[in-house]
Structure formats: C-alpha cells, structure tokens
Length: 224
Length: 224
DNA sequence: TAGATTGTTAATCGATTAACAATC
DNA sequence: TAGATTGTTAATCGATTAACAATC
Image (tube, rainbow over all chains, first blue to last red):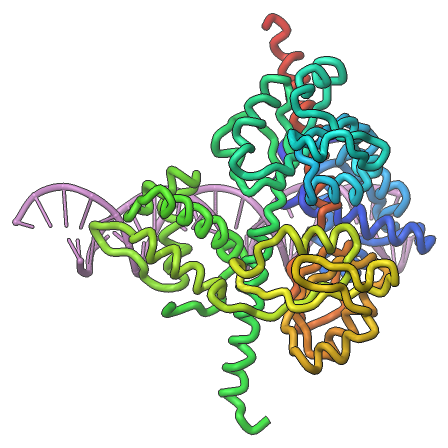
C-alpha cells in the first residue's frame, strides 16, 4: 500500500465496488484480469480503473494485468477491512436492530461491541449476541471499551445531543442514519450518511422523469 | 416547472437536501431567504444554489431572494412528491419490513400497495396496514393494480430472476437494497441503489484514513 | 431612485478519458 | 524477441465557482 496522499471521495466510493467484483471473480476461480476486461465487466473505462488503482500503488504487471486474489486482498487492506475497529450502535429501534442483524461487520472492518437505547421496553432485549444496554451506561462503557465509531439510528431531534456526548467520549466517526446533517454542526468529524429519505426522493424524481420521457416519446411517434 | 432538459444526477441528488432545509425554515416561520443565506446554512456556494434551481426555472425574485414556502412546494413538485406512485415491496425479511415501517412513502411521492415474499413463515404476517402476500400471486396482483415501482429487499442471488419477472409485468423502476448491480444486466431500467455494505466499507476507509492522519500528526509534532 | 439579489455567462477547477512510452 | 498491458502524462469533459448585467 505505497502512496495514498489525499484520494478523492469519488475514487473511495468506487473501492467497495471493485472489491465486490474481484470477490466474485475469485469465486469463479479467475486468477488474472486486465483493466480492459474488468472495465467491460463493471461498465467503466480501463483508464479509470488504472487511475483509481494507481492512487494506492502499482498492483498490476505490464503485459499481464492484475492478479485477482492479490488485488482483492490489497483493496481490502486499503479500506481497512483487515482491522476490527470497535463500534457501537446508538438506537435499537426498528432500523437499528435491522442494521445490527443485517450487516456483516466483521467482513467490513468493524466489530459491533455495544448497543444502546433509552427506551425501557427495548433495554435488555437481545440483538445478535449482544444485549441492548441503557444509554445511561454509555459513558462507563466507552471509558472501559474505547469504541472508535458509532452507528446513529436515532430520531433526528436527539442526534445533536447524542453526538456531543459521543465526541466527549472520544468517538468522532459516525455512520449516520439519522436525517440530520452532522457535518454542519461539528468539525473534525468523519460522517458517512445513509439518508434513506433522500434516496427515496431521488428515486421519485427519476421515476417521474423516466415516465415523462416515455410520454413525450409517445407524443413524438404516435404511430407506434 | 418550466425548463428541465436533462439535469445532471449531481443536481438531482441535492434536491432532497434543499427540500429538507426549506422545510425546516418553513417550520421556523422564515418566509424569505436569499441564495447567500441558504448557502451559508447548507455549506454550499450561493452560485451553486442559483445554478441548481435554474435547471428547473426562475423561482426567485431579483433584489428579494426566494419565497421559502413557494420554493419548498416547487422542489417537491419537481421531485414528484405530489404524486402517489404505486409501489410494491419484494422481500419482507428483516430489512424489507423495516423499510416498509420506517419510510414515509406518502411524503416521498409513493404509495406502498403490496408486499411479497416466498417464505411461508412470513406470508400472511402484517406490516403497517398491509399483509405480506405469497410471491406466487405477484403476477395477478400486478395485472390488477399496476404498480409502477418496486423495492427490492431480497438476497443477491434471487435478484436477477425477480427483476426479469417484474420487467415482464411492466415494472422498470427499482429501489434496490440488494447487493447486486442491476443496471449492468438490464437496460432501460431506473435503479436507485442503497448499497449499505458499500457505505459501511467506505466508512471504514474514512475511519482508518482519519486515524492514520492523526497518528502522523502526532509524529510530526511530538511536543504537543 | 438606490440597494439587493437574481439569472446567466464566463472562468476555474477537478474528474474522466485518451494516448503512449515503459516494461513485463 | 514480439505482444500485451500497465503506469503515467496530456487532453477532454463536466461540474463548480466567480462575475456581472438585468431587474425587482
């Protein structure tokens, strides 16, 4: 993992996809692939693939291409999937529980070590091999176990306050499902947003746009 | 909603965020706002806001700025939130049920009219005001109710086949939670992906990058 | 009218694509 | 060695920012 420097977010966001495709090739026992072949598979340009990879070092070999297994491993390391960064979940409602159950944290570079909520009906219930703790014990837990990142599955209105507490406990990495723009209020914070509401609305735009085009197509060629 | 043309995806993805911020301003009884003020609030440039909005028409007034309520409504219309596009959910496992419960479809331009699964243990259970139907009745249902879009909360390996069936039933808009690149195998299809796994890995990269920087900061200035 | 702020054109910046020399 | 394909530099394209005339 030679270079790095400051790689653009556009490149970073493509890494998981490379990782995924290389994983599939690996399962199909493909041992080598050229940027051209991979580009065709992923609907990218070969140039882009080579540029992207060269942000992190030269993983290929001229005249040969890339070794699938090696590249897969390398990209995993670049993303830090070989680590097990300790992480907690705040908010064990519907969404929180589902995320906890659904994600493969171990294969994504994390280890979920604690789940917290303030609802008495939820506290004490089990999710995976963990039990939901009272949010009142959050401070204690963090001082003892030093989680590095937090998943936020809490209502919009509580987010600000919770983040302030987490920051005071040394956590400044947030996987944020809350409908709230963290990065505006806090500096020096890493935030990866999953704004499902925004995604659904964006989808809505595209659906309507597509059907509008269809209609105007029909107008233009009423014969068909 | 004058112009439109083909607006870039970058702009479209910002629309929900504009909508959200304008909604908040509305709640705070703010009646007018200039691009400069809004830019400061959202941490954008005033130029970008004016450029973005002008993809769809001139909603402002020189010397005054924008009327918050009017702009909020307009952006809602642009995204098609005033429609109620009928939509079905395929896959009522953990993730599917949570999405069904969690999202505010009515406020996002959709109406969830059916939920399908092939697991006998899940079929017949209730989610919201709906009951999970046997996937075997999918064809019948679609011919009768004409859903326009589908949410895909199914395992990766089933996705391709399900999409083929849905396409044959006239559905070509997919809000895709499946870890699978639909758009590669199907053309003329609208796909909005929610790749939670990719998001978590991207987050992992950022977490590790940030802590690496911290370390090297410490190296550079060991005095502090 | 004077001040403010838009809509829009021009300039800049960054990301993607193309080209090609280096080299396996 | 000849063929293939990389790593990297240069060209293009698109998106963001700056500037300003139009106008409320």
